[in-house]
Amino acid sequence: MKSLPCYLFKLVIPTSAFIAVAFVAALCFFAAAPASADDDWRKLHEEVQAGRIKPLGDILDSLLRDWEGQVIDVDFEEDDGRRLYEIELLGPEGQVVEFEVDAVTGELIGIEGNDINGMKRQ
Image (cartoon, rainbow, N blue to C red; front, side, top):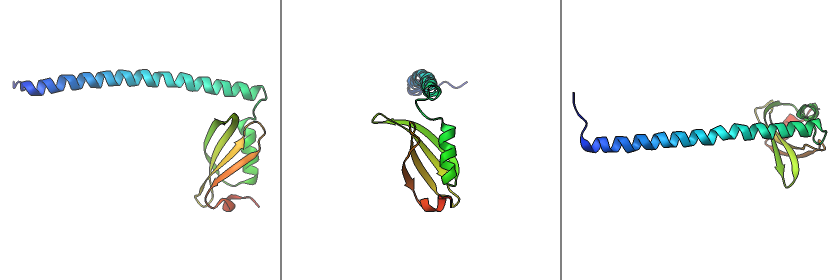
């Protein structure tokens, strides 16, 4: 059996230790994230149940009544104390358009994207 040269052995051991430490650190970091995300969604659910913000289903029904497309992404944001749903729709021509809706009032605040008029229902 062939033995490893001394210089190669010195390189392998520290690299393996570094990888192991980095792996453990990453595990600790990502293990904490889901608990925080779960808490955020629980709080959001409580806000909806208490009537302080509109349910996403109501917002989507209203949006899709006026605009044609498929929902591809939804985010809930708080911006300067204002609670917003950011909803991306994929339009019939392949365009992606983002709608910002006030989560408290249901009011459409803004629209960004290309060929927006191609998604407006007649």
